[in-house]
Length: 426
Image 1 (cartoon, rainbow, N blue to C red):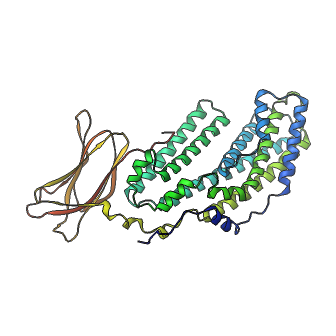
Image 2: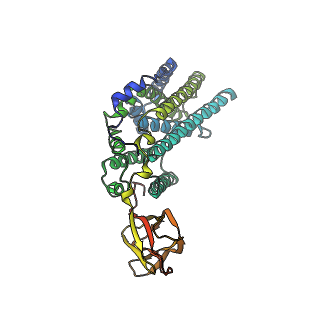
Image 3: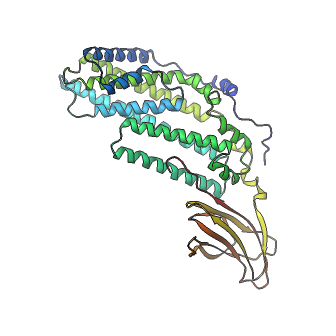
């Protein structure tokens, strides 16, 4: 096993030096020019008629500074794009003077659909990359499988909550407020993992041996002045400009759509909008491609091989017992929370009086006294990295050597009872 002695979490100073290798070519000057033009067009519309209460909120939002966090800006861009697509898809609301302008509106819609696809794909890939990177530090046995299963279940529940909100008539704004809340919940859980508090305090008991450097890293990665602040300082400004641009586009379209009963969409307005859509789409795609490469290559976490071979690190987690000829060995556990896991890992120790196999089964007596066979009796040489989900009750794991007349069996085993990891959506 490679020692982790002397390793420390990646620091902001280290990232600053590393990011010197990845300068971002500034955004096209067309971004600020077109953003200002569209904002001026929105201001002209307000001169024609005062804003409604809902429009005042949009005006205030467009006039505010974009969020400081990179990921929050990503969500904000995605929200505005969906709002723009919603407006462009409204039937029979836009009066244009000829088919050419109607065709331009169709191209606008396709541009923003393309931008949405780019952003959604980036977020999905980045999320999976981060999770898989962290998982390389986790135990490469059943415990890692459990964490992955729980993460998948949690994400399904989060998506179900968003789907329920949408189907019940929730607005796009409501949807993205929920999505950001869910993102903050993921961040909170990451910090708890590093601090070993809350539900993770129990879970961490079963992840002994995860390098301390990883725990330190996840605890402080999102601090206001932590490593991510260097990323915000370096790459935040161009993203902030794109956020302002798409907010101005959304503001103008919203104000215009609310006044189509008294005025028509002008050719010069649609021309500026089309140019803005093209520039926004191309510059967003360029930024997303660049920042994706930076994320992938940034040394936020030490490579797993540098941290050591996790599979070999915790021999003391296992117990070794001898099951006499004609006898059994039982391990009893009490499970208090439904959807907990019982996990086991065992094998016969070679060269210690073993012959072939040993019987093994798992049974449960629930709190009503009913007995259920969870894992039917079978004979095994080993059953490694296995687990089952449980209801509340008392459980027994039974190694049975009763069929043997002469031979003792030496078993090396580990048994864990892991409570469910909950999230805000669970």
